Image (cartoon, rainbow, N blue to C red; front, side, top):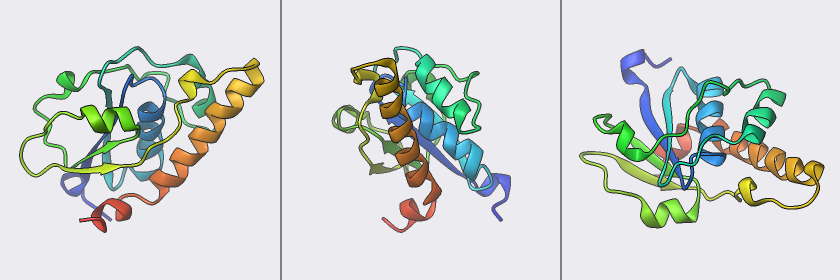
Amino acid sequence: MYESKDRIKVLFLCTGNSCRSQMAEGWARHLKSDFIEAYSAGIRPIGVSSRTIKVMAEAGVDISGHTSKGVDELVGINFDYVVTVCDNARQQCPMFPGRTKHAHKSFDDPYFATGSEEEIMAVFRRVRDQIKAFVEKLPEILTNSK
C-alpha cells in the first residue's frame, strides 16, 4: 500500500475537460485513490457534460461536484504523469516542468455523439467503460512504460 506522500500525481488531459478526462479522474479517484492523486483539465474547458455525470452515476461514481478546469488552474502542482486522453490534447499538450512524464491513450469523444438520446448515451457508456478498463491498469501501465 502506498502512503499518501507516495501516491503519484496524475493529470488526465483532454480538449474540453467535459467528458473523457472527467471520467478518467472519477475512475482514478474511485478505484485507485490509494495509489493515485487524480486531477483532470482541458486545453479549452467547456464545462462538465451532464451526460458524463449521469453515466458515471450509473456506474456508482459521483462526479457531480467536479468542475471543468484549464491547465493554467493547476499551476504549481508537480505531476508525475500527464495522460492525454485525446489526440488533440496530445498535439497541444503544454510543457510541464521537472520530472513529469507523458502518456497517451486516445478515446472517442462522446460529446460529439449523434442520434437518439439512447444512442448518444450508449456512446457515453461505451467510452466510460473503456476508460474504466484503462484506469484499472494504473499505475502499472504508466510505471512500466518508462
